[in-house]
Length: 51
Image (tube, rainbow, N blue to C red; front, side):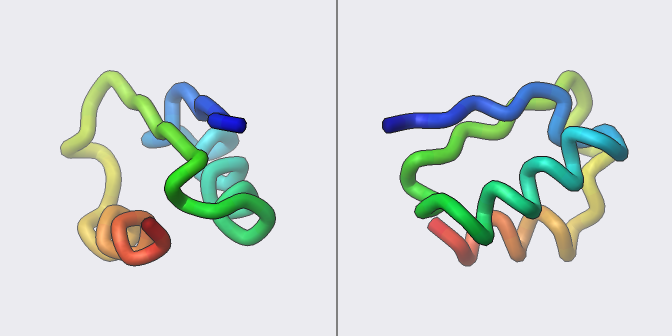
């Protein structure tokens, strides 16, 4: 099953995204955000490593 987290660059959805990575395989997650530049580089790197 695939899960979609919208607004992953925000505070609440950013936390949801991190929690989802602990519970679900990265290949089953899709994160979206209106402005990727607002996501810190270390957070993007951590998300990509979980794939």
